Image (cartoon, rainbow, N blue to C red; front, side, top):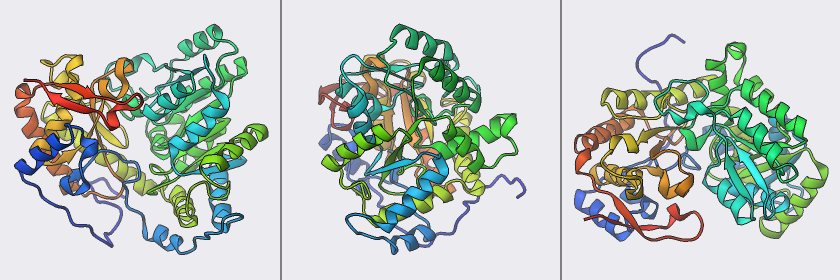
Length: 451
């Protein structure tokens, strides 16, 4: 189709959900009630919800139709057979273990492979991956490529792993590395993609050291689209062909199907290793359920099976990536710094650069996220020192775009809110944490504004 300036969503709207408009006083009261933690807000207190793209998307008519085929048998479900066939056809991996979401796959995998002193390198671990490794006594190492340190660089594959650093880690910690992980796309570095060339190089290093390679493939389709757009070798390839090659370099995959599975719940762990699969399946039964449902209803397995096909449609991926580019371009017009180039699932505001008067220990990204809600009812999430502590490389606010939910006018409104907040940015004050849990503090921490 010809190129036009207007973003036309490649779908028609079949059902609608009303939005509730709040007053400034209602939003202020909500912030104080929740200790200025946006995770604590009720959904009807939020106008535009960009907290996460995980499980917040809209399902297609075909997915809704597939729900009616759901086989809710406790064991031997035909829905599982269709689900497993879809995953196997995409990944080429033999053993498919369903789970209720991605972090459950991480928990099961690491419980069977990570012990005290284990070292797990990644391009960059996201929050639950790091927390599950550390919970089992392991050390989660981030090895981003050098280009990732510059948020304004237009380098096409800033999600890549530093190959030299990986070599050094595997030499230094020989015998202590149960696996190498690659997160595609790299969520913590602004949703940046990993190139096929980098993936091949990581595979070669792993082979030399006899260490398996796993992918966190929550956004594999978006990563595949970026490879088509930015790696000349693959410019004529289909998203399905690129995705299959991407998975061909992996010994195993964890995935939250709440992202590029286009479903509201679910995920999987897939491996080729028979013995590892048996151990993980045994642990699955202990906490998630029988291996043919893994804590999911049969109807959810059906929805994921369809979603894994729909997510690779070129028209969908073109619209998906163009939407984040559109919002990022608006931010650039406003001189609001974002991580460049924009990722596929979100726009990341560089709060450290936008609020230079706030130090790291004043949590500038949390302050900016709170202000976006206070001014316009837009919920986002801090991806910085609150989420990652000392491991944080940047102070970012993620505006995650739910799949097939918002139209261009909704995104235009978000741009207006960002403009308003930017105009008064030097009046924004920092925060201090007054309560935090031991793990994943950003979900339930409470904050107090500085005087």
